[in-house]
Image (cartoon, rainbow, N blue to C red; front, side, top):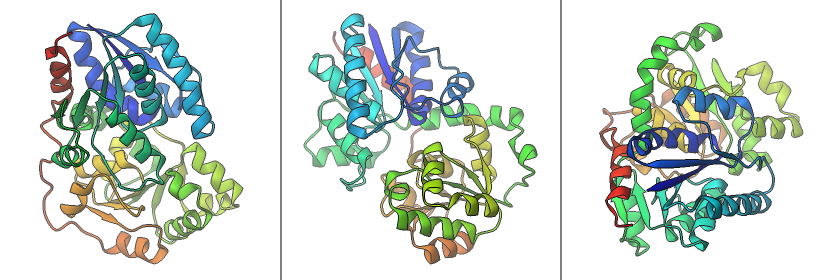
Length: 354
């Protein structure tokens, strides 16, 4: 059996690592990298740190509008799938790469397997929400990280091919956190003391493309002391365009995007995390770091229900109050599985008749 794994952005890489390792024990794998993310900090370093084999194909797509980017990916992926004739096309998460891979495979009648299926924010203005809904509806294998994801699919009459596997991000986090604690020097390099700093990330289009929301978030972060801010390249450009970059540099400890191991250590040792990232919300929960989510909704409702994640939108006052006052009321539960999602995903694919 041959699996074509299609990736292109940091969230895809993290999810690919444990699945690829399981695939290569007994199966053939072809990795197609669209290069949706293409700078070193957000791309190559993740392959190196996570032990992902070098991609077999690089499409060199880069940035662009959603339509153009997805269209270019669709064309390039289709050509490779025709050449390789895989038995299954494996896609991850909710990026434009995910959608392009699923569409290309579906139109060639190649079964699509979706890792992290069933997530819903119920906000169709989010590009990620559109991607994940479309991908789920053209997938034959739907690998769900949580019970809520399974329930979401059932409400859309998707029941065939659905598996509750747990979350692959727990697999890789459990594997890498000890390595990060032994090898990462990020705290020393940034002169940070554990639990004496905040960690902030901002990259969602709903925040970066809305000047008022972005300004409110910047105002809030700049009013909180000791904030470390790994700045996404796209976010930096928006801050520069809005003449907010100088203020951010003066008020926050701005750093370039970091690798996976460094990010894990920053997340674990922060007193709180302020973010609009879905992956960071999950990692915060897994590492038992309180999370403040600067969005109006989240796919990871379990982290909210457990009291470890708080939705604050983009309101300056609410963000500041949460940073100073929010504390979880109980211990986190085991909602993301047992750390063997990658194995369960591959076993499910192999067990299906060819």
